[in-house]
Structures are given as structure tokens and as C-alpha cells.
Image 1: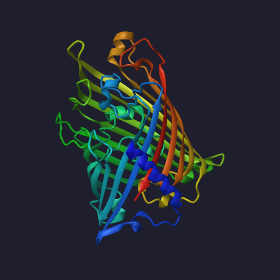
Image 2 (image 1 turned 90 degrees about the vertical axis):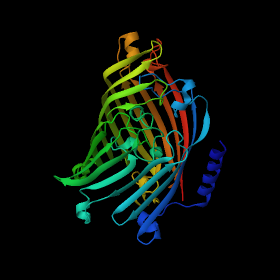
Image 3 (image 1 turned 135 degrees about the horizontal axis):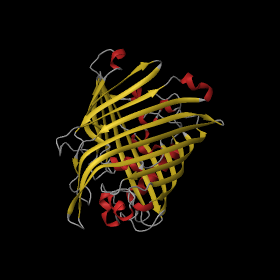
Length: 432
């Protein structure tokens, strides 16, 4: 609490005495320091202060067997909210360095206690010396964000809406498996006037900061993005158009005591498709993202009531999300391409209205026993405002409605369309 209040005071003081980002600000490369000749180094501190209040107990996290986490299982669900609270949600240290053809990146979050502070730590390089050849193939080795979905798993995820979608939280074990130690090959090429980006990876299929391999099966995946030429959509006032596809075989995994229900995954497969469109309508810039994720998994979990292992084959899961951001006002003093933090350059700056729709459906064994139904979607609706006070300070306010449906309480309780509300206020900032 004290740390959060202190952060708010420091940021407000910074807003009072610092100016906007001029369009002529030096780029990342020019503004970096060189502790050793030929070695560039760029350091940034990023933080997030969050206040949340909900209508009663808020239980968004699922156990792998389909149960919702309850109030006494707080440690298993960082997003649980039982009482209104003000917290320091994240404190990032982002470091980027380059030396010749080699690039190194480190991302530390000192507020992450369940998996340790290291989010990313990797080195990437191309086996080719000439830039015209290196664009076709580069390699990345270390711990990094696995390439599966597009918008939902970019750092920092606080840019627009302050959370991941339901299905992303589920398949990533509530954020513990978004990043893993892995090796990845990536690059891009031109095909019929279109740009094709690809990323292929292999890992142990475990959690973040874990080098173990609980079942000796490797996880692998492939992500492809296609970007057509801008002239194709010029008359529609669309500036950027991108469509992507992904596949992941996450293999098996023994969760052990990671969740209160002892669970072992035998096989996990996921695939996704998504689209991003940015353009102008009625004189305003908009950004539309829509994505769909589906999958199947074989698993077994221990039923403590019957003292037996329950085996589920080909259990299906699917989820969809749509996010629309409309910039009601753009700050023309800020050129996004000149922002020092490269991860913050993808969107305009100003005042944006954000609308969100998110649904998730998981085959539920206990729901089947009680009702004869396999699935019941959980729906999340949200609306919010994102205000870039300065380029380095952003204020977000969101109101959400969750329809827990038949999933509420982990077991079917005869309550359909059971919903709750939540309010989130968030201040995100960058310091140097």
C-alpha cells in the first residue's frame, strides 16, 4: 500500500514538471549508452499501480478440472479480488542491448512472486551477416514470450485493457506459462506483394523459469502473420491490416501442487486465428482486434470426494475475444515511432475509448454429471477509457461485467446467468 501511494505521488510530480515527447526525440539506438565500445545498452523502468473493487467475491480463475478457485485458494489466483484494494501491480526493468549481430533483452518484474522476477532473458542473432539475408532467418535462445496469439500476449499487456482474455489465462496456467525457456526461429519474406512473418519454437512445455521436463515430451508451435500492401485497402481508409494463424502442441505436464486439484496433462493442443485492422472512421482513428482460440486436451485429475483419478479424453475448449479502441482525441505532439521504449510504439497516443467482449467455454466433467450439458460459456463485457496524460504516464478506467453462468462456484448450483461487476483504475508509467 505504501509503495503504491509513493509511486502515485512520484508520477504526479513527474507529470507536473516534465513535458511532452517531441517528434524529434532521438531514437532508441541514438539515445543508448555504450559501456563498452560497440555495445549499446538501453534501460527503462515501467510500473503499474492498480485499484480494484468488485460486487462481492471475484473468482475469475479456473482449475484445470473446470472448477473455479474459491476464496480460500487466494495464492493460486493472483487476479482474485475479495476486497477493494490498491496495489503496485507491476514494477518492470526492461533492458535491451546489442553488439554487432547479437541482440540481448531482459525483462524483470519485481512484483511477480509466484514464478520469480525474470520474465524474459534471451539472445537473438542471425546466422547471416548481410541484412538482406538475415531478414529471412534469425534465432532466439532463452526465455521469452511464446509466439501463439498476437495482441493478447504482448508486453506490456497494460497498454489498453488491464488483463488477458479468459482463454489465454487458462491455457497459460493463469499467466505462469506465457513465457518459457525455448529456442525459436523467425523471419519474414515477401510473397505476391504481401509480407509473411513466421515464428517457430520448441520448449519443454513447462512453466516460466522452469528447466524441468516432467514427461520428456517437447512442446512446439508455429505462428504466421500475413500483412497485405496498404494500397489494397486505401479506399476503405484502412492503414494497417494483418491476419494471423497459430498452432501449438504443448505436450504433457504434471502440475503437481500448482493448483489445489492434483492434475496431470497427457496431451495439449491449441490453434488460433486473429485479425487486426487499423484505420479511420468519422475522422477518428480506430484499432480493431478479434481472435479465436480452440483446442483439445487429455488429462486426469484426482477427485478428492471419491478418492479416484478422473480421466478425460479430447476435452474441448474454445474462446473468442474482440477489442475495439477508438481514439477520441490524438496528441499530435507525440510521435509514437519516436517513443524511447520500442514496445510502446504500436499505437497512437491521446484519449481512447475501449470496448471489449470475451467468451470462454470449457468442457466440464461435473457440469455434465449434474445437468447433462458439457459446456456453458462464460462471458465478459468491458468498457473503459485510456488517457495518455504524457507519453510516459497513462491512466485507465474500466468497468467489467462477468456472466459466470453455470460455472459459478466450481459446481453446478442451479444458478444460471449469475453475473458480477468489477471496476478497475490503473496508472501505468515509465521512468528512466
